[in-house]
Length: 315
Image (cartoon, rainbow, N blue to C red; front, side, top):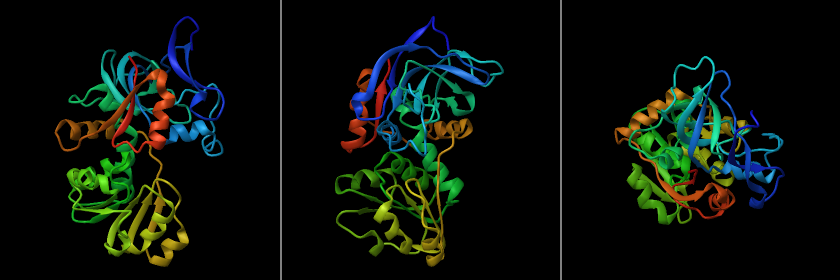
């Protein structure tokens, strides 16, 4: 860090509500070995950010104050650290920073180059920033963990959510038979993403409508996860992003189960950018906020049920 150069950033110095997020002038970071310094133009909001802010994640994901939130970002490379050859100054990129370290709710952030890729050419910065965490989570859940292949069947809970909308599109692109749950207002939207069947989770019992599935992607947890066991065929797999599935329940039903935590991958981000630019997959920005209104953006993510990602614009 250097004290000569500053930037605007959101800082958290105590756990609590959105009022704890302060818009401040802070030292600008520098790119260390293996890092690129990014001038951030957009950062999207993920639930983990307001969960960290509230303090409920402190035992699992301890953060140090002062803390700048933010994982997803899109911007321009303004400097590179020693040993960096994969990126050059002036390139437009998108990617992720680790949630524990944070940093995307700021004008500049230093990011390991293995967590960045050239942004999709067909998207603006706000659209690009909406992608990394949810798309990587979807891809790694379906393909790297569940091993979903063409012709298999998958049930995606929460098909209209951030992860869900990418999971539906990726599974359809792979050639799987896609079933998703969603609220009544989102049924047609999820069908438009490529789901062959969409179940209104309030009006119908999904476990009465589907069975013998190869994969369940659980993005909801709780009762939804418990009711999902009976929908799998023997040897099928339940992958959760929310809570560790019960090994005992999995054994009882003769299936496999695991919880996934997303890991950054520049190679995968590059592959996803290719799918975006070729029109195979699309993203959706539901609302935008300026950096100084990061608290309002997090609250909208927590309570408003906005379709598509909420993005913070950083001029």
